[in-house]
Image (cartoon, rainbow, N blue to C red; front, side, top):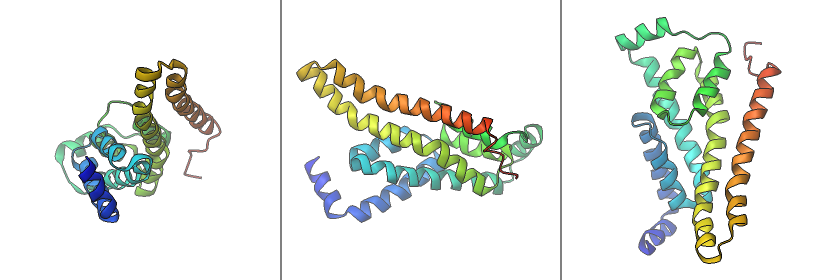
Amino acid sequence: YVNYQQFLTDNYLISVMFFIIAGSLWIAFIGIFIPVILFSVLTFGYFGAFYTSFAVISGSLICFFMAGIINVEKLNILKKKINIKNDSFFLFVVLRYAPGLPFIFKNLSGIFFNLNWKKFILACIISDIPQIFLFTYILNNVTTTIDNLVHNRDIDQALSDILLPTALFFFFLIFLYILKKMNFFNLNR
């Protein structure tokens, strides 16, 4: 691990570029988010949230463009049957918040919501970046929290390390609901 950290320090820019490219391709073709965020946190710490955000947005955009370009018969049949027009942007943002769905599914489903690439990127930014920063914060604090629990048995500190970002995340969801009620997501104005 020490040699790995020394290599990162000596080749930081190359490591970041490699991570962003590999993370983008991973999100675009595999679509499983957890290995990307975990590797990011273990490698870059809190700065990994920025690199992961860029990798997730670019990988999602690659997958979205591929879904629009690839003329798969089954996908076109589904697109004719599933065509969401009312509140499509808001519903797509909500879908991206759904836990457990692979990113490849979330990215490919963008074509069913009649989104152009600008709306798709905006939806990714609104839904994915807060989650990335939340997960980064939690994963970085997990080691500190475990250490506190094992050595100091400080449950209050453990709860504050985990509950604060979770509460902020729920407040963000409430904020999105308020914006929807104010008709903020109607981008056809």
